[in-house]
Every structure is written in C-alpha cells, then in structure tokens.
Amino acid sequence: MRVASLLLLLNWPLAGPAADFESLEERIERIRSDEGVPAYALVLVDRDGTRLSVTGGYADLATRRPVSPGTRFRIGSITKSMTGMALLMAEAAGELVLDDPVADLVSEPPFTNPWAATRPITVAQLLEHSAGFQDWVQDEWDLNEPLPLGKALSYRPASRTARWPPGRHSSYSNSGAGVAAWVFEQVTGQDFEERVNERIFVPLGMSTARFTPDADVRATLATGYDRDGVSVIPYWHVILRPAAAVSLEPGDMAPYLRLLINRGRHDDDRLLTPVQVERLEHPQTTLAARAGLSYGYGLGIYQWQRDGHSLFGHGGDGDGFLAHFGYSVESGRGYFVVINVFRHRPLRRLRAVAEEWVIAPLGEATRPAAWSGGADGALAVYAGRYRQATQRFGALPPTREIEVTAAGGGLTVVESHGRKRRLIPVAPPLFRRPDDSTATVVFARDADGRMCL
Image (cartoon, rainbow, N blue to C red; front, side, top):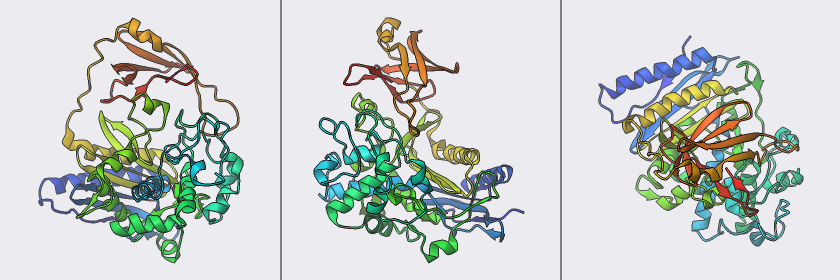
C-alpha cells in the first residue's frame, strides 16, 4: 500500500513543471518501495519559495502511522551547519573572533594540544575539523543522557587530544562543534541552544526545530529503524548536542535553504551577509586552503560536485535516520531529504533525484582545459608515494598508501588495491578530477617540507 502526502507546488502554472513534479514524486516513491524505506520526506525550494514538499510511507511500522508533513525527523550532523552559522553571527556581534585561539577566550580549554605553544587551536579550526582531533570514542557514542555541554565535555576528555598539528589537515570529528558551542557559552554567559533558537529558528519560522525531545517531539517524531528496516532504534541522546541533535518537521528546512541560496537574506530581513555565507561554505584554516584550495569543509557546510556542478550542504546521521541538504548558488535551487532507516544506498538514490532537479537549469557543465604548462617534467615534483596522515577512529596509525605518477600532461593516482584516478592540472598546485569543473585537489608542503596531497 502506498501512503504518501504531497504539499505545495507554489507559483507554478498547471502544465509543464507540475507534470514534472508528478514524475519526480513517482520516482521517489519507487525508490522508497524498492529499498524498503519505512518513510521519507523531500523538500525542494528555489529563491522564491517551496516548490515541492512530499512525504511517503509510514512514520511507525508497528502502528501503521502514516508519515505526514507534521512528522518530525532527526537531521543529525546537519545541526553543525546551524552551529557554525550561530557562531558566525556571534562574531558579527563582537562577542568573539573565530580565528582567535580558544586559550585566549577561556582559561581552561577542554582539550589537549601538544602543539599549543606554536599551533594553538582556534574556534574556526574546531568548526572546520582541522583542530587535529579524532572522533568520539565508543563511550561517547554510547552515552544516552541529555547532559549540558560542560558535563558532557568532562565525560571523556582524553578523546579531545590533537593527534597532528592543528590547522594542517581536516579530519571529521564531532567534538569540534560541541567545544565551539561551549566556548560561546563561556564567553557570553548564554545557553548556546537558546542562542540558536533566538537568532536562527525564530527569525526563519522554524517553529518545530528542537535540540532536545520535548513532549511535542516525542509525540510527532518518526520511529528510527536499523539497517534491516524493521529493528527499532530508540531515541538516543547525542553527547554534544550542537554536533548532531536537532529534530524538526521537513518543511522547516525550506526557509533555512532559502536563506543560504539568497546569500543571507530571509524575505525582507538580512540575517547574514554574503561574505558570511561564503565563509560558511569554504575552508580557510587548513594547509590545503592556505595553498589556494577553496573546495572542502567550511564552518559547517561543505562542497561537492554533481555532474560538474558545485553544490553546497551537509549530511546527517541520527540513530535510525539519514538526512542530507544541498543547494546550488548558480541555479538558485535546493533540497532536503530524510529517511527513517540507517541505510545509505536509498539516501544516495534519493539525493541523486533531488540533485538532478537542482542542477537542471544549468545545462552541461563547462570544465576547464588542462593547464597549458602541464608538461610531465613540470609535474614531476608531485610524483611519489603518499601515506595517509589522519585517521578518524582508532588508536592504530593509518596505513593507506597511494602512488602518484606524472605522465601525459597530468597525474595518475594509484591506490594500494589498484584503483586509478586521473588528476588534471588547473594551475598547479591545484588539480581536478576529469569530471570536475573546479579544482578539488591541491598539493602543498607542510612546515616540515613534506609534500602533502
């Protein structure tokens, strides 16, 4: 049985685009059925409003409760984009400076940094995952208590130890967003979640967005399911809520998307400047960024390519939920999609459909020609064997290696299992993969003189 709910197609003529949305909805529902997804929600927006908001399936399989526009979902690490936005707003208000060392803002930073004398950790590095932290240890993932930030950070402090010099590499760690939010609380004396509600949720009309499960959340939250699609995962508290705790009705993501697409403007109000939105989207604190690569993870939003077009956004895991949002600055379109099962393949398929719509007005991407000075001799400086420098989990040293060779006016990267990838010179040290339309790879020497990819 198909259970679906369709919301508004705003400002479209009855023919043409509406028919296209009917076809899109059928594709989405087919993916849900094929993949055994209990429920999904999809929101499509452009600069002017919501173009499609559709849900399908069951919010709870045991009771056969249909999903509806009023069903809440957990959005996981999409929360980090909101945390980064709130801290950018705090900087604009003169409350802190993101590039200041944390040790200059608080007397006892909740981390250990062996390079503190020469490479202090900054708030921006916490948000860009370039502080040198690995991710949470198992005890932090397993803790199921709604703790305030201070107590949460005292739970397993050893997990927040810089493993490599801060500001060198970006390696995803949930700790950074939580520490950054705690720094805000120490500097301002205000609860961070109250600040996000005051400066982001209320102005945007995101009335259902919550960091903690109050009675309304409990009553309307979809049930989350494990990989098999039937085993229930109960609500699990996130140890550092600014990293991944928000739940909301899907429609509440529409004004958030439009704020980013419209470069900080919400209807007649300006909440962010265009420069602030660009700072959210682009890294500045890593070795790669300092070498000229603007592609990567910014202050809570990252960039990727879809058929040669640049998209920005973030994904999220919440126990039993997977979500993703993305948008194109060029097309002025964006999407949010969420499912209530911890299985990545259906989310990838749903994203593909949504992203096709986002980039549809753009046509074929233009890819830059290879750098005219890309003779093999000029590129040989980048050839050699590279060893993995960071590791998100685990105590063992990373062991992955790749071989880079220069030939045919470009570089070839060969991984240990035999996979090959071609890199085309844009303007060395910047390179792109063949399908990319912008530089996505950079080579740079670190402070010790070693070449890094």
